[in-house]
Amino acid sequence: MKKVTIHTLARMKAAGEKIGMITAYDASFARLLDRAGTDVLLVGDSLGMVIQGNDSTLPVTLEQMIYHTRAVRRGTERAHIVGDMPFMSYQGSIDDAVTNAGRLVAEGGAESVKLEGGSEFAEVVRRIVRAGIPVMGHIGLTPQSVHKMGGYVVQGRDNQKARQLLDDALALEAAGCFAIVLEAIPMELAAQITGRLKIPTIGIGAGIHCDGQVLVLYDLLGMNPDFAPKFVKRFADLAGAIDGATKAYLGEVRAQTFPTEAQSFHSQTLRLVTPADEEPEITETKAVYGVPV
Image (cartoon, rainbow, N blue to C red; front, side, top):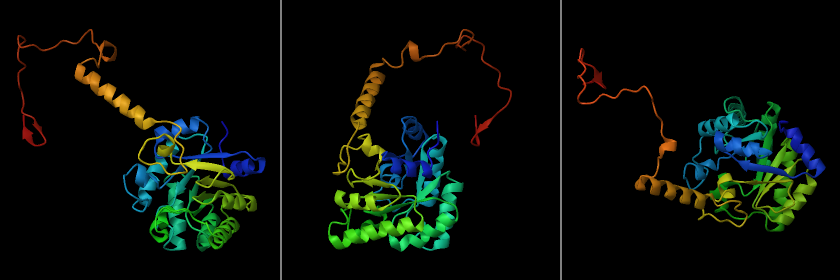
């Protein structure tokens, strides 16, 4: 099993092979996704919404990202692991950005980091790359700027904004990014950007012409039937499967048909104390949590 690296991804773009990226937040799912052949596992700050139940990614901390990245690292052998830089872990100062990216790699086990933003963060990218840490860019709809953008809306729909996104992509490439996520932009613009860049583009709501695609794991698996943005395709209905399995389990517990003999353990040597047996002599008084027993 050959490890996927940033050089693997570059070769895939050159060969016209599409890159498959999925978010992961724990070792169990990482193991399954890795064995299925996923090229890139993104430990996304989307965990703030799908794991923590927040209405945005903004509350996620660096410590939480390190924790979840470390868990994904334990479950992964082949896939390349990207760790998201959470809100305010790189926007404050370049020195802080380099330090925090280093923590995500050293403590979390990430093999690269991802940060949101365009040309205004080119120097941040340049410094992190100079420190020996690969960086994936992210432009278009950038969830950490949700308030500035006025919500989760498609970006780059007019010529001026489209030109800015192309300039951002070129600036990030020049700064040293090894790949760029394009989120919620017109497919025609994504095709132009992908054609201009030497590095891979990973699309989410950006059409078929990107070098790869990424989806949030819980969306891909159909874990939330109430969340149905245009760019998501459900490849399973785990919400329905979980509902059915839970109801079946509860029904058997209440009907006393689970557990059965097959789920029970036995002992040939165990001697049970019955009321007819001699009561054991109490030789000392013990305390549990400070209360005599």
